[in-house]
Length: 238
Image (cartoon, rainbow, N blue to C red; front, side):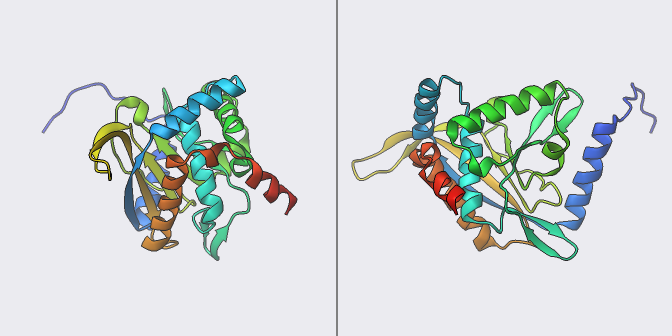
C-alpha cells in the first residue's frame, strides 16, 4: 500500500515524550483506580479564597493543593523508583501537565506540600507562564515526585494517564458534571468529577492507591483543609 501526504518531522520534545512513555508502559506494570468526587464546595472555596487573597485560583490549583495534602498523608505515593529500591522523597513536588504547541511537559510546583491554597494558585500561575515562555528552572523539570494531569478545561470527562518515570503514580482528572445523587432527604444534584490514579504496581498496591485517592477525595469535598495553614506551620516546626 502506498500512502501519500506530508511528513511532519518529530521534534526533540516529541521524541523525548515518545521515549519516556514507551519506557514507562514497557517497564512499569500499570493499574488504575478511579473515584467520583463532588466539587461544588471546592468551586465555592476557590472563588471565596481567591477574592480574599486578590488572586484568581483555578480548579487545577485546588487539585494540586489537595494532591499535596494526600501525598503528605501517604508518603509511599510521593516516591520515585530506583534500581536500589523505592525512594520516599521528603519534599512534595507536584508536577502539572501543561500542553505547549510542540508537546506536553509536566514541570513541578516545588515544595507544594508547604503551600496554602492561595500560594499554590500563585505558584501554578507563575509556573504556567514561565513554561510557555520557556523560562523554567532545571529542578522544575527534573524533581517532580508526582504528577497531576487535568483535562477538565477541554471538556474531557474521564481518562487515564501514563506514569512519568521514575515517579510511581499520576492523577488524571476530568471536568465536573451534574449528577443526581441519593441523600437522606431525597435525591439531590451535585457537580461530580472523576479522578483516576494510574499506579506503578512494582512500587504500590491497590490498597495504597485507594487510601491515597480517598484522602484526595476528602480534601476536595471538605476544602477547608485546603485553606487551613495550621498543619503547614506545625510541620515547619517539626
